Amino acid sequence: MKQKDFNLKFANLVRTPNSLEQVELLAQIKDGAKLSALQALEVYQEDYQARLTEALKNTYRAINYLIGDEDFFGIASDYIKIHPSCSSDLDDYGNDFSHFLTTHPLKEDYLFLSELADFEWNFREVFHLEQVLGVDSLLLMEMLKGEEFKVQLVNSARVLSYNCLVSSLYALKDNESNEDDDFDFQIPQYLLMIKNDFMVKTHVLSKSQWEMVKILVTPNSLLKIFKNAPTNITPEEIQSLFQILGTDRLLLKLNLSGPGVKNIRMK
Image (cartoon, rainbow, N blue to C red):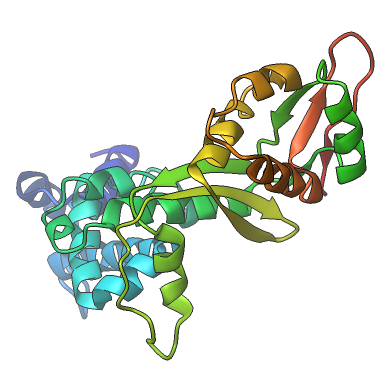
């Protein structure tokens, strides 16, 4: 067997054990002084499993905290069997975890699993994004006087909605006293997640504010945004929302017919 073919088969067996291919490959490996060929392969397989499990724990810390190490190890093991790593960077592992959990049997015991996983993956993505700064509060106030301006939410932000209080569940991982763990989490939540310097920040929005922010994900004129605003949104909600957008500089001013404000990226 050529070395290239051997390396490929060995890597595949480490990721996904297969009894037939294993017999073929082990025939090409000599036993060592301390470990047989089979034992050596099992060491690699166990190490692979452990490293991917640890990668999942690092990304999904809140899930690990809430369901405990034993259940988390079981879920991780099930996930790894179906989703072997395709990247040399372990930090990229686990992007399908939320979708995987929608059909996992343990979801019956933990109704929040999939949504919390989605929140944690978005948190991880936003943390690693390059921060983009839009217009500041003063310029945004001036722009609001002329509704012909076209704007868009910065791409270092996420507009999220869930059927449970995911941000509260996520915060429990840092609750060393274990107080207030028992609360009604089955309440819808609407969030604006942003990159804020070197941190991830989440704003809890009302449903009306969330619907208005969704319009800002794609380029739109301020006139269109206000025309399509939810009918039940209050002036106070609009004021609070645009205060957030201005303070955290979350809106980009786009060119219409003349020079606009350039995107400013944090280095």
